[in-house]
Image (cartoon, rainbow, N blue to C red; front, top):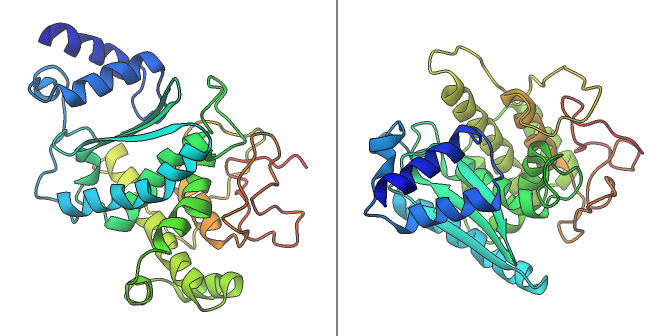
Length: 301
């Protein structure tokens, strides 16, 4: 049984490396493996890179982040007649996270190896969890191979446009945390122009920094020897001719999250599955700053 489960999971992983949304079949196997904690397939059958004791994030902080997201989104999914489930696997060394659907259940699978990466921070990991929520609630554009999952860039956009704002509003330490961050003055000015100087401003600062921190994790995971640099004020200058539904570059993902943080459209306005303007900033709207960047998204309207 141990060998069969491990072999099947390996087969599913071959097609999902760096993927975030998974099929129902793979979801079933992954959830089974999380619960079968006595089956140590990770070290025996599929290579992992352990990050225990290297990172800034503790198990307690990991659980706190997950709980804070649950408090916001379990009721929201329930209103839609859906069950929101986060499966936690702190002891698993996989450096990834996944979203999946099974019937009326909407899943997120979170592996500890990602959270324990030496460059990961609390807010960066919150952006990871929010990205996975974004696969479920991010709306248009969706993956070409899925009728339920928002594209990777859209999930990034949702993470700071909606999710991080909702979660961080509950944090009583927003001001002190945000003011302790090292950020370029240009970032502070942009956040202030969009949000004034109140809680939304502090959340904008935290989300911007989280975007940069997570982008650096992505670069490190892609190539440990890489000297590629990603910064808030060095946006990806590439212009896509068609909307990229897969993972954009680390810099483009950083740009997308930063724009989501800057967008001042109310979080209560949900994103739509067809209308790219609903709930988002748009180049042709009164608030063009905060729009999805051209490095992955092509605006049609």
